[in-house]
Structure formats: C-alpha cells, structure tokens
Amino acid sequence: MNNGISKTSNLNQVIAISFILVLGALAPMLDTTMVNIAVNSIIADFHTTVSSVQWVVTAYVLAIGIAVPIAGWAIDWISGKTLYLGALVLFLLGSVVAGFSGSLWLLVVSRIIQGAGAGMIMSALSTLIVRAAGGENLGKLMSIVGLPAVFAPILGPTIGGLIIDHLDWHWIFYINIPIALFSIILLLWKSPKFTPEERGKRLDWISVILFAGTFTELILGITKVSTTGKFFESQVMVPISIGTGLLILYVLYAWIWPKRALVSLSLFKLPSFSASSLLLLMSGITINGAMLLLPLYYQNIRGASVVWTGIYLIPQGIGMLLTRTQVGKITDLIGAKWVVMSGIFISVLATIPFAFADQHTSQWLLLLALFFRGAGQGAMMIPIMADAYTGLSKRQIPEATISTRMLQNIGGAFGTAILATVVQHHLSGSVPSLTHISGAYNAAFVWSIVSTLVAAIPAWFLSSRNNKARIEKRENRFSVTAKPR
Image (cartoon, one colour):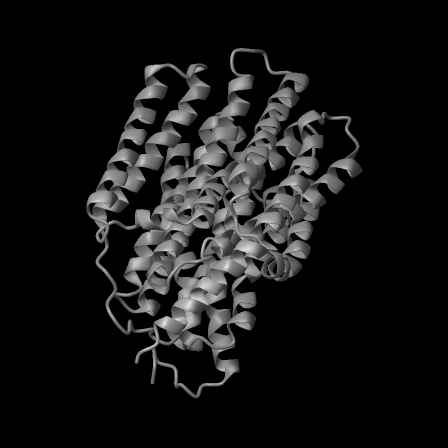
C-alpha cells in the first residue's frame, strides 16, 4: 500500500479522490471572484473608501502567498489528509467570521484566516493528486485540478451577483459553509491518509517572517499614498523603507545560508525563471488589480446591478477558458516567449477601451473587449507558469513551486493595492461627480495598460523554440553522462 492506495488501484479510484480534493478547492476559488462583485456593497455598508476596502481582497491574497510555502513544507512532515482537513477547517472558520463581520477590520482579519486556509488547500491540491496517481495519467488528472480555476471567472461573478441582489454581501461568505462542511465529511470518509514517504527539509521561519514583513510593509506603504495624497510622506516612506530593508535582509540571508533559505537565489541564475518570477509579480496589476476594478466600473459608472455586472463579466471568463484549451500545446511547440508576447499585445488592445470608456460607451464594444482581454490573460499565465520550470533540476523544482505560487499571489496583492490606490488618489480632495469618478477608473486602467506593456521586457527573456531546444539538448547530454557505470 502507498498513501492508503493500492499500487494496482484503477484510474477511476484516483479520479474519484481527485474530485473530492477539487471540491475542497472550489469554495476558495469561487470566493475571490464573488468578493470582487461584493466590494461596492461593502463600501456602501461600511461607509468607507475603495482604498480601505481593497484590504478585503489584498489581505486574502497576501495570506495565500504566505501560506503556500508553509503548506509546501508541512506536506512532507504530516499526513496530507490532516493538512487538507486543517486547511478546510481554517477556511470554514474564516468564512463564518467574515459572514458575521460587523466592521471592516474584523472582515479583513477574517479574510486573513480564509486566505491562510485557501493557500494551504491550493498548495496541497496538485501534490496530493500526483501522489495518489503515482505519477501516471497526469494530463487527465491535471485537467480535473484546473476545473475550479477555469470556471471560477465565469460562475463566480454571476453567482455572487445573484446572492447580493436577493440577499446581501454577508451571504457571499455564508455560502462557503455548506460547501466546506460537505468537503470535510467526504475527506473524512473517502480520502486516503497521504502519509509522507520521507521527511522534507525543515521550515525556515526566518525566511517566512522576512517575506511576510517585506510584502506587508510595501503594500501598506502603497495604500497610504491614497490617504496622504503624496509619495514622499513619512506615512508612505517609513513602511516602504522597512519593506525594502527586509527584502535586502532576505537576499543577504539567502546568500550567506543558501541551504536554509526558503527560496534559493541560485534559481534566479536562469533567465527564464527570473523572467517568469518578475512577470508573476507584474501580473498582479495586469490581471488581479483589473479584476477588482471591472465590477466597480460597471456598478459605479454604467449603473449596472450586481447581477448584470456578473453577467457582463462572463465574456472575459469565456475568453480565458477558450485560450486555456490550446495555449499549452502551442507553448510546447514554440516556447513561452511568443505566446506571452501575443497575450500581452491582445491584453493591451482589449484594455484600451476601458481607459477611455464612460457611461455612454457601447456595451457591445466593452463585452467584445472583455472577451479578448480574457483570451490575452489566458495566453499569458499558463506559459509563464510552465516556463518557470524550464532548465531546472529535479532538486530545484519544489523550491520553484513555492516561489512561483508565492510570487503570483503576492503580485496579486500588490496589483489590487496599487490600482485601488490610483482610483482613490484621483477621487480624493474633490466633489465626486460621475465624470470625475469615470476619470479615476480610466486612470487606473491606463496604469494597467502601461504595466502590461512593461511586462514585454521580461517576457523577451522567456524560452523560445530555439533556446528551449538547446536546454533539452543540454539536459539529454547530462542524463547520458550521469548514468552509473
């Protein structure tokens, strides 16, 4: 027996286990897109601003980013079943507290609890399914793993809109409770133990603390710009200076004690990994930040209800879905570089209408733009994630997984904070009118466009067909020379 599963277990058994694990990840995946729809209602309910409420999204994404490396460590020390159950209980607890929150900051605290559970779930999901399968039939199984990510952008806004329209934003969190409870019961009943086969390396708490401090302080500094109205103020510069100092400390720490550090600096010697890492950070503005803006734009500028806002966002999800089905094959053929560059070009063109749109802009133009925007995003993310592993040794893969997942989520937190700050900065110090509010959102979308264009610089260093062939040739030569005599 291996992890509670016989080696001769058929594929149907593994698929059944995969669906049980994926069901546990469904609520966290839907939660992000549903909460984006609820932001406007939360602003009105708590009589607060966009820059304050963005912490409801930012805290969740930041907690995911910090929880990922902890889960990556824990899965090699405790039972995978215990880890997944603990993560689901944590997410359930956060959902209950969020649903009953009567103040903004209690809601933010609950989102940190939710994010910690969600980060562990997302980190453990793929690893446990691969272990259950014994490394076989991974293509079919990974398509199951990807189901929540594929359907969340389509279903999340619509379901969230219907809930808020007929109930209120608290029910966005209450709906997680039965899903999480059902997942916990199924796991207790049907899931194998997933006992670790060997102990991994010890979790380096110094790295975790330095990472958490770095990104929290930097985001805090960015959001303070909206309240001060200036960059060179102590409220802004102090947290940014602390965050920068902590990042420098981590680099020094990882250089002096490379075996202890959570993410080795040696990974960044590979151009494709460095480029992918930078792009994952930047994707926060190009993708995550804009996902916060779009529902607010439709509700505040177009006057759409929350239900219609969710419906209007469906084309973006469809565009992502259609691209995902083909982009992996194309990347394998020509490398990540030109696929990502194409995605950047499409995303920029599709976001331009929102940089000039007002309440009179053609709805059909915006829906078409959203479809192509989704297609561009889909063309960017999969090749970037895949190229992060190009040329890495087997020993480096676990660290690369921790690094990429963490950077992607922390980039999302940065993107949300930056674009919310841009909107709030343009709205501060003036009497809000529809024209002025529209201009604030236009400015934020311009920031998203500029960030996407700048992303073309690191994208140029991703693998192409030629340098990918050289890497494969080098790896084949290595595998021949490394054979035992």
